Amino acid sequence: MNDRPAPRRTAKPNVVVTRHLLPSVEARMSELFETALNLDDVPMSRDRLERAMQTADVLVPTVTDRIDADLIAAAGPQLGLIASFGAGVDHIDLAAARARKIIVTNTPGVFTDDTADLTMALIIGVPRRLREGTSLIRRGEWTGWAPGALLGRKLSGKVLGIVGMGRIGQAVAFRARAFGLDIRYHNRHRLPEAVETMFGATWVESLDDLLAQSDIVTLHCPSSPGAKGMIDAARIAAMKPGAILINTARADLVDYDAMIGALESGHLGGAGLDVFPEEPRVDERIVALPNVIAQPHIGSATIEGREQAGEKVIANIRFWADGHRPPDQVLEGLV
Image: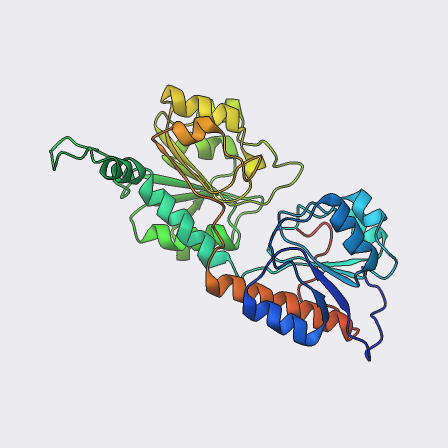
């Protein structure tokens, strides 16, 4: 087991938080631990992260902090827990942490509904051309209702292809069923028949087949060496003409240059994006495309979700400090 002896129970662990969290979460952390907060919310530089890891018992990073093997190797011997704020852990080198006997935890499940809600908003908004309509009104160029104005596509009867049928993928399927979408999915492993029946979902063994069948494709799989760039130029070219791509998962799943080219040519009918390769920078070509709804990585941005994530971080630290295995310990190879 990837464990390390906990600090003495009589001492509060020294906790460094890399970003500004909700006030209620920070207040509770300050009560329970010796906590260093980042109140100005400026992302920590690599040097600042390294200094923090040389002195902290617990580091609380977020998905924007790249905790690689070199940083972990330079950490002080007291660092025993990386309690990440967020469900994803691809920003942490788990193998390097395991080698140093540093436990890694995350906050699974708390953002499932929030991300599924935003995904559904994009699934609705892109084919109904909501960005174009909003822009028309903001520019003062709307001339009134007309039979042929801003014609979009209805959802009912369209094929929704879900890539990755974990918690979020299933939550999207649950919502999409109410809109009359024909739900098909690709996953590493087929779901039990009872689960498929509950969501009205059909398993498609081949990703290529799913892409070829779908009117709308939405991505909900984690980043991994095998998944990076899986929606490449060839696969985008094989998608239905006019198909729509939704990505609220990870930017590196998609070849964004190929996607932009397909959007510009009209092969793709639109895209809904919440993640980008070089955040916070967004490619100017994406910004200029009228058939793209782009959001600033807000899939998990609800007060309730962020509070629950903070509570999970606190619980994981308390379990570890008391000498117990944290409830959300991430085991390498099982993510």
